[in-house]
Amino acid sequence: MTPLEDAGSASPSAPPWTTIWFSPRQTIERIVATRPTYLVLPLAMLGMVAAFYVQLAGAGLAGLLGDWRLAVCFVVASAAFGLVWLFPSALILSWCGRLLGGEATARQLRAVIAWSTVPMILGALVALVILALEAAGSDSPVIDEVLDEVLPLLGVFFGLWAAIVFMLMLARVERFGFWRTIFVYLLNSVLLAFVIALSVRTFLLQPFDIPSGSMVPTLVVGDYVFVSKYTYGYSRFSLPFSPPLFSGRIFASEPRRGDVVVFRPPKDERTDYVKRLVGLPGDRIQMKEGVLTINDVAVKREALPDFIGEACGTESTGKAKRWRETLPDGVSYETLDCTDNGFLDNTGIFTVPPGQYFMLGDNRDNSSDSRIADISTIPLENLIGRVEIIFFSRAEGESGAPASVRTERIGMPVR
Image (cartoon, rainbow, N blue to C red; front, top):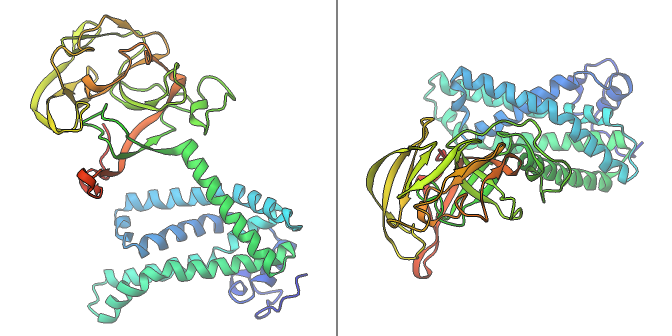
């Protein structure tokens, strides 16, 4: 047993939720020795809900949960995340502990993780009380001061308390001293952050930046977008470095005409491209005098005011014809036409092979896409994901001026 003095004693008959506050080490020792699964799953779920809620309250966003539907979705999603994440986090913690001679099993560490969330649950209750007082319409300056100054600190205070409880319990079940506990805590935090980032990037959302103007006006140089990895399922291109571990797609779902897609061409599997999907398997695609035709029918388009900006492959600001194009499926978006009778404004007929897709850039005269042989049609396996939203955007300053943030583009969905 680690020779550390305990701050208090835990009665063997006292419920653990009453002794965890001042005797976390004795409490967790009693739990893992008698009932290692006691309340672990409910606490893991409730603790994650509480942790997220405290952060929302501290950021002044708890009002978003005033809609009961959003509140239900928040609780269900947070609880599910807490339950799912409990098991891999315990495994990672167990591996970190064993590197330094720890004795705890993954089951015991799940108890440590779950019971260390109790302070966060208390923090969420405190936040709820404070916000309930505000909702009651109190005009007390004391309440206003609490809301303005104390509420944002709840996450820090209760988060620190939970971290201390976690480390005390970890030291007891692993039979660690102070420095080994600190090292394992830090190592585990780094690995967890890495695993979370890798999991989100691989299975949920991956950020990309837009380096060229081939998708103007939908996407412009300096946009940063999130791409959903789950929309079309997963292929080797969903994984970091695209290792050839398997072929085809897992949980595959057919893309829809009009989606803005990130992909890698078969002839250049190291470069990411972003284009709009306009042709499905079996379609006949052709450009006639700058007009897209699908299966011998010209796609409907209407003229819009000229686009003013950098769109046609030059650094100077100029004009470009702008059109609103509507695909047969009803998807509508804007395209640009820099020159009449451009190099790719008139093409032969492209018949899209089975299992492949035809891609075009919205900036039709300034895009390398499926109209050229180096890109051609794209197999389903080579799709990385669908562009969902612009989460940041900045414009490079001219003549040495600092870059500026395009606040009006942040949060724009990509359609």
